[in-house]
Structure formats: structure tokens, C-alpha cells
Length: 379
Image (cartoon, rainbow, N blue to C red; front, side, top):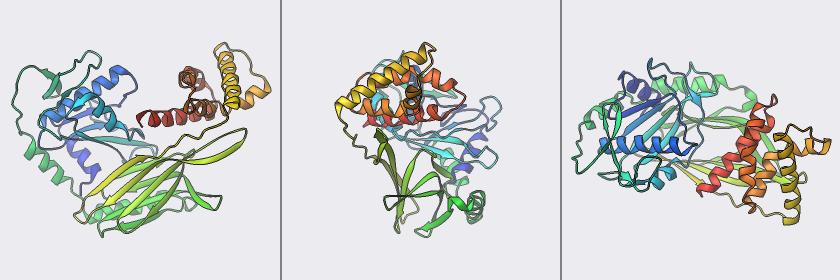
């Protein structure tokens, strides 16, 4: 078992980026250019390491190697992005790794790239990179290769040595459990469980009971052996279950109109522990969009459009509009998943205004709605 925190420290001890690891201050894949650049680096690292893992470390200053951290990155569908753009795509895993000296809400991102075939190339155009382009790492640069080239396994023994140095031990495991239990108040019900006599998971969250079912919000989960953290915000509602070899987190989304709400399963994350000291983490989208009366939705959609026009024109909202504005992102989300094609773009138009508000409640709802829409899009 690899302690991911130790792995990051060991990688950073190589003061400069090289052919098996890259570092970034932040990871942004929201625009076409950002996506293309990310895919380019993944392609190059995969081709340069045909028989071993390659890594990206996110949340590190480029020149000083200082660990500054980033926000939790919730994009379990990053593999779909890579699959969409690459021939012979490598397996991609993004993990949020906690560091004691960082602020509680900050982590370091670790992207693990595992090649699945000898050669990876672009299957479609992306920004200025054309279909068929092959990238390779030369030092810290990802460069295009033309014609045939021979893949060399020069990094295999180096990466194996680094991963061995980052192996876990009992002291680190116990320290991790004690630290987790100590930093979570009793109201969050911190717990731990051992799986397969090797793996330790700690979790904590605020309990609530709805229709006879126990949900958790503001949930913090940590795979102690690997220092990998999962996080669900105060807006998320999740259930947790487990048996001797599996830990299951199911996330629900609260949706409704006219103050009538229900909980719908959004996504489940399954952690399977194996006898050989390895684990698999699988994420599956469960969301089935609820259907609402079209007449009612047209009324809500038009009301939201009026509110948006007033926001963009700096026109004061009426008392009723103020009330509707508080659930504005959620109702636009409901319209979007019920076939209103412009609802998503209308919601995105409101972002600059919502972000500038002093009270961030509606902006947080906006981010949550966009996250759900992104997941549904990948489905």
C-alpha cells in the first residue's frame, strides 16, 4: 500500500518536473484550451511511461515547490474526458490528499496515469492539437512526435523505487487515525473501521433523520493508509454502509418545486478491499431525473428568466422574486433536466452576478447545480 502523502513528498524531492511527473499550481479543465492542455500532458506522460505509473501533483508552486493546496476537486468523470480525446487512453485517477499544515478545506491533488497500451494519440482535434498527434515527454516539456518512435522503459525502475519509498507503515497508520478522530468534534460522530486486516477508513459527518432514514451531511472520509480524502459539503446528503470487504457511499440530491421536496440518488462510490493489499474505487452515476408538470415548469422557467434579466440590468427584485431568487439555481437545474435546452446557459449567465454577492448562499447552490449538470452530461 502506497502512502500518497509520502509519494507526493518523494516526487517533489525531484526538484524539477521530468518524464514521469508533472506539477501544477491548479488544475482547470473548464475551457476548451484548458482541456486540450491537460489531455496533451496526459498523452505525453502515458507515452513516456509505457510500463509504470506517471503522476501529476496539483497545488504546488512551480518555482519554489511550496505546497499551497487547492480546493477539493470533484470530477469523478475525468476518465470520460480522457477517453473522449485519446486513442488507447490510460487509466486516470484523481485523488484529494490531505496535508496537516494545509487549511482544513485545502488538499493536494494527485493524478495517477496508468498506460493501457503501447502508444496513445489524439483521436480528435482539440484546440491547436490535431487528430493523430502523439505527445512525448522530454524533460519537463510535452512535445509532439512525428513519424515512428520507439518507446523506452527508462523510468520503470526509478518509479518503482519511489513507490517503494512511499510504502505505508504502522506508525503512519496510527498517527492518521488519531489525527482524524482528534480533529472532528463529537457532533460529527467520528468513526473508524478496519477492512481485510490492512485497510483503515475513518469517517465523520452530521447526522440527520429523514423519513426514517439516516443521512449524513458535511461528511469527511479518509482512507488512512493512502491519505486519500473524500468530502461532501453541508449541501450534500449521503448514506454510508459497509460489510467486511466493501465501503459504500451513496449521494442524494434534494429537488422539488413549490416547497415540496424529495431525495433522489445521484451517485454511489464503492470502495472494494482485496486480500492482496489492493483496493478499487468505483463511481457509478445513479441519477434518474424526476419529471414535473410542464405547465408549472414553464411558469417557473419564465419567472427565472425575468429574474435573470433584472439581475443583469441591476433592477430591484420584487418581494416574491426575492423569495424565488433563493432557489433560482435549483429551479433552473430542474428545468434543464426536464428538457428546457436554454436553462443551463441561462443559469451560467448569472454566474458573475451570483459570485459577486456578499451572501454566498445562492452562489453555493449555483455551483452545486452546475456540478450535477456536469455529471448528467457525462452520463
